[in-house]
Length: 76
Image (cartoon, rainbow, N blue to C red):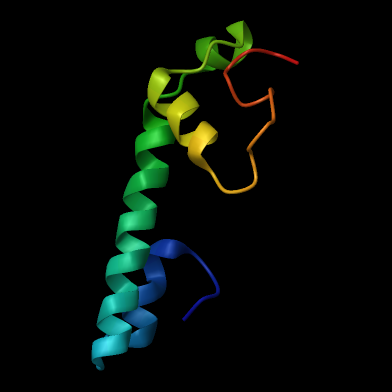
């Protein structure tokens, strides 16, 4: 259930148990979050080094980035 493309999780698991149904919701939320970042980040953002505010905010709050200065959308 944890391997392979994210959009295949529910079909493989069958979501027949409460745990599988809950995991399917987590995968759906994760897929939506990833799509939100990728759909709203352009090549121009990457080339300029100026990431959208929503990407910068997510990067700043990700575990393990405290004190890092390379997650603010600026090269470096």
